Length: 337
Image 1 (tube, rainbow, N blue to C red):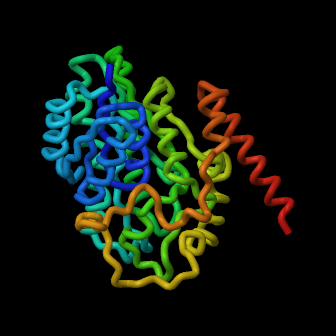
Image 2: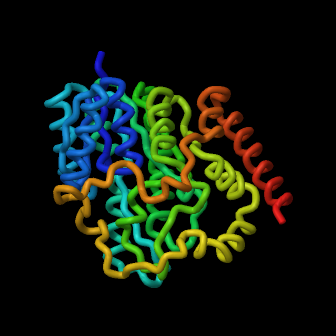
């Protein structure tokens, strides 16, 4: 039977790469995002891989629009099997330089967008007692960093909300599953179109992974939703283990390094377009694809992610991998001059 998948934030980055993978499986993929050019590009990708695509322009901060998109997806393809929440936006700036309206908008998209997507998915899945919801999270949802207070707060909220829903589904003895995939730094177009007030061009904190690495983690989680959480990338494991065991040291470390590590040496253009209020991939020719501008610095594979999928099946395995990554990082730090 052909799988029907809905992906929010499908026009670029992790959402785009995930749509491509499901397309290669021959899935029916409903693509939700705001940018027309990005959506059309994603639809072409899915169909080139052998799947069927339905592009639905949607602002995930609008609950009615998300619910209507779910109806449209099922009218076209039949019952939704998998719903993947990816869409987000952010502001790169110290907290004191973010306006109340900007903070609200980030929260509405990055947190409430997941709430509304989960609501729409459960409205379809619960009566059938079938389906999987994958929340694309971030290591920053458990360990915050400076200059991303709105995004980090929203991702923390996604974690708490998802745990609550999971408990309710377990109470109901439901066959609907919900799982989280915690990501590391990924080479997506967000660093070219995010609203930034930093003096230099924003960048993901190295090590950086290609969106296909993240997408493989999402698809694996969709296939194996019995685990409550997956980690993708060595840095995710190091970050989350560090937060668990040495959080006060991380506060001081990030206070010293967290500003420079999120900026390149290039001076910022304070007048560049950003996507907080309107998409920047809307006009013809503005499709950015899955990748950002850091291809030459990004890893196409993650040994940690592969091992977590193939050798370990539970929380103990994730902990073992995390401890191994943490010890490896500390060892490398000791060897460095």
